[in-house]
Image (tube, rainbow, N blue to C red; front, top):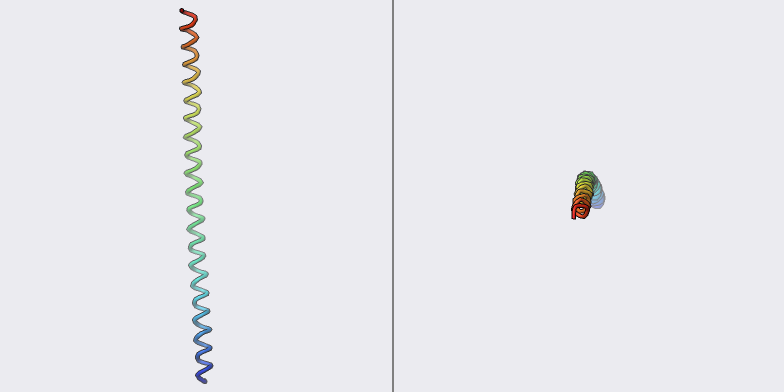
Amino acid sequence: MSTTSKVVLGISLALTLGTVAGVHIKQSLDRERLREGVVRDLERQARKRENLRQLEEQISLTRELEKERERRAAGA
């Protein structure tokens, strides 16, 4: 095998290994990003549920306050 052939083979192997390694790294990063997206979605849904709970609590408190004001106005 000539020196030129060995050099070409070496370069080809290096490029192939670099490409394979790059693809694996990219796939790992993509998978991690997908997992993070799921976690963010779950956190967002939890915040939404908490906000709805707080809104319902505020509505209930507002109704109670309005009833109390009506009672005081009727009694005065």
